[in-house]
Image (cartoon, rainbow, N blue to C red):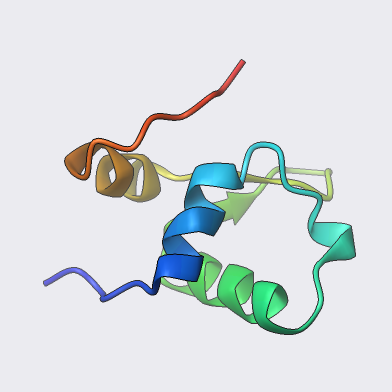
Length: 70
């Protein structure tokens, strides 16, 4: 069964491509750490930013959330 995500975590999944994790503090940092630990996002190799995993993309696709990935 899929993990229950908060509205804030879902919003972060939608914004992850444009997010600057170096500026995350408090709640956003905890949300990012949790999403990483449960396999929805991963850090890009050798870079400070993150990307959705297949699991994260599938989660958003199931909910009809659009992504703006260029």
